[in-house]
Image (cartoon, rainbow, N blue to C red; front, side, top):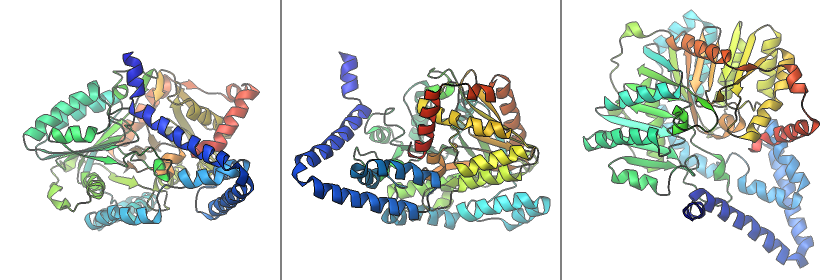
Length: 510
């Protein structure tokens, strides 16, 4: 009886029920006016035609256009209407204008040290060009006085995070896609409450959609009552709307302006293997010290002041660099990516790395749902002799996403790309490492949502300490993974091939 009651009053179940009610209501209204069917057909067909024209003339990825045009043409009565409700990037002109303050605040607070940029150019012009692109389109500068340490598992991240949280004296900023009550979050929360009681400024941002089935409604008020300030990104309203598309997928921790973390791990028990859902959960994070922490501080605060509709002096959260310069090697450039413009920074960063690679490219991703540009770049890299290896999960968290991932295997394998599935379970890491020179660690998946629709972040590194650490971590994972062969991929049933083909075509909508 209790289980039935919990199911009935579960927030996610209620949301699904309300959306189904809306869909059924629309169908009933149309059926009730069946006498005017010709008029309805004409109106909705015109809407569908206009939607197709708009999609064709938009600057969206071609695959995204095809994924919408096909269902609209197949179901002209509902297709265009459905696109108006949930299609597009989810940001109207009015919303973009309102959210532009995020970009404006970052522009005010982040400034590139020209000597650092000059030194990078003297060392490597290719790296300079990549870094300059990131700085131009994200406003995030490159630093040469910051240290990094790669944490190759969720457990390592959790242990280090607890240690650094306990040392906090001034402020703690947390921004996560998923927070869920359990061993990991409850342990962190106890520290946060203790710090807040001692006068430490503790702030949390979580994505409402990401936490829809993880946290109870009004959880932000519960945190506020504990003395912890909290903002909810894009509060979920169960109405068919383009707002469903945009999510804050970032994972950011900033402590006293001296230490920052980002990576794939969220704050829930499966990320540290205290709860087994899909075999062993493989994840990672990166710890940053030094001036580069400032970029993450500004990222968080610009989102915070937007959500709070407030103004704040960011500079009071800026820390004097206390990092031992002897510990700083290479260049570190945190960056963010958002749907506020038509510049797909994350994808461009990845493509730059792939196209410039000379020896090897090792990639870890939970979803390999790449567009044509990415597929061509990976294939050409392998064809020109670059050792391209991609690690994906063996036990998926989403079966449809895994089917789309596997649908990309054949084309890549035929080009010479090596693909591995992480045999112990689910690989959630999001890393690139290239030629012992470059690495990227962040929150960005190789799928359409991460690359085009979500707020994301990452760290680009050149000759930094963590480059070798990322490489070694991936190589160790490959040793316990299954290398997929072309024969395996081709030797599947026709039914599976058809299902994968259809899902791949619709992948941009998932």
